[in-house]
Amino acid sequence: MIHFGQISKKQFLEEYWQKKPLLIKNALPKFISPLSPEEIAGLSCEEEFESRIVTGSISMNKWDVKEGPFNEKIFERLPNNKWTLLVQGVDRYISEVHQIISEFDFIPRWRFDDVMISFAALGGSVGPHYDHYDVFLLQGLGRRQWTTSTIDCNPENYLKNTPLRIMKNFIKETTWEAGPGDIVYIPPKVAHHGVSLDDECITLSIGYRSYLNNEMLSSLELSENKIDAYLKDPEWEVDINPAEITQSVIEQSRRFLKINTLPEDFFGCFVTKLDPEDEKKFNEIRAYYAQEEIEELGLYQLHPICKIAYQLINQELRVFINGEIFNCSDIDENLIVSFSNTRKLQLSNKSRDLVERLVSLSLIDKST
Figure 1 (tube, rainbow, N blue to C red):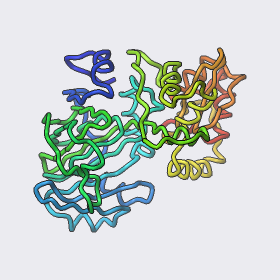
Figure 2: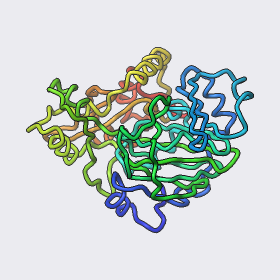
Figure 3: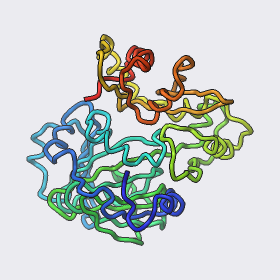
């Protein structure tokens, strides 16, 4: 779990989460990027990863974006500075990156979206922008300057005819310098601008998506609103179960959508549903692991691409995996809850039935 330094986890959740940005020095002491610049470049040449190269800067007032997968020769033609390579969804395939997510499990795991990794040359940036995400920006190599702002964070303030969402007017409110192991937390709708201060700069972005009202209403087959809005989290407890959907979340969602009741299984199915790209990848994985046999000993883990959550409904445990209800009525409740929260399962006489069921659905594989 990350170290919050001079503030407590409770203080972070009450005063900063979804409210204001924060620099957390030495959040993960001695942390270095699990991937080298060369390895990141290699990933961007593979079909499995969504990648981009962004060149430009505010001073140049000119931006260019190239989309991967790339040929390795492109890196020989890049300028010496002011460019950034971005690779999305690295946690899906790189176990060393996936393991980092558990450091942030004081936020429900079903809120997690993906880990993006960026490698930037000196002066590299993607411009000032804001998102509807909560994001932890973990510095892995070199130094990066971060500036943040809450001013003019609206669509009208984006540059026109630019291949990126870059703010036209960016008025700095805070400026920080982050080194390896430091984390900058950025709430939704807070503008941020990161610029590499070194020739080699690696940053990992651990993102948590927000849920759009009209996306939820559409899933419920209800009339959509004319104005988009995003669901805000309730006040999280200091100690949570990462996979649990609490009643406070359900009540928050009901008030947000302005409906009297939510269908019992709606929220769990909604928040664990894979997006189309991840669903495509998962179907490929299922085909690959279709003939996997269970070994007598070993630790199994939920595949990184999968989403899992559970909820207590009328004293009955419901488990949701990848947008569907997982049948576990005959499984020991403590066992399935532990698996949901840790995403890991040790094969034993007690767990064999659950392991066999999960393997048959290609949801778990042998931990390496």
